[in-house]
Image (cartoon, rainbow, N blue to C red; front, side, top):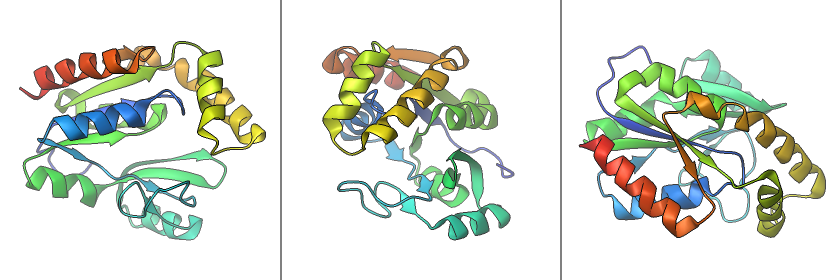
Length: 191
């Protein structure tokens, strides 16, 4: 980010299906000083996802235009023609309101954001108990077909290799316990 970093942020990353989004929603409900940074994506909404609430959805062409316009803090092509990124305007809007910005991003995005924000950021990797458990969770979501699940598991295997580049690793084998643990960690960081 070219501008001066003016606030704190939390960076949550995990393989798809690890429970990251559930944990993030728990924190947002229970810690009023947090604000969710709505990521941008060049894909269609899934399930009940809403534009401007869950993601800012753009076409591939629109996303590429925003890249060219330098509108992103960071962005990545996660899969072919499947872009995700963090809009500069989103973050600044939350800092201006005095909030700690919370990011829900993939592992590479999390690593990139940590490099940008340094000690103003706490990066957290939500780790599933195993790839087998992860596969079951993905199947139970019923949002992807078998080829998509296979692709997500291959990506998860890759993302798990980055775990040592995060400030904190949260094992999510018990959701209630994981939420309680990370709430304490986050409160300590914000203070």
